[in-house]
Amino acid sequence: MPGYVRVKQADTGHELSVPVEHFDAAPDGAYKRIDKDATYPGGDPLPVKYKTTVAKQAAVKKGTASRAAATATKENS
Image (cartoon, rainbow, N blue to C red; front, side, top):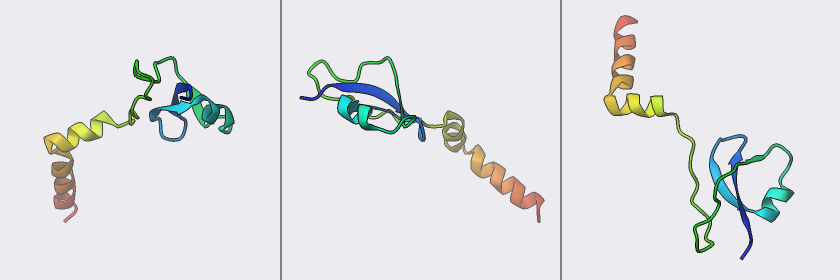
């Protein structure tokens, strides 16, 4: 089983576990190695941790994003 490292993708900000060989072969700046475990104790790679914007998600959950859009449309009429 290959060795894995935990990295952060430069273009997306997602955290993922990649084989060491993949990390070494990647172009400079594609990944930033981070100091976290890359695998479960059994050796399987950890799942991707997607970068999200909490403020946008919270606005959608509260419904304020749709209310703001409705208000802006009403004011522009």
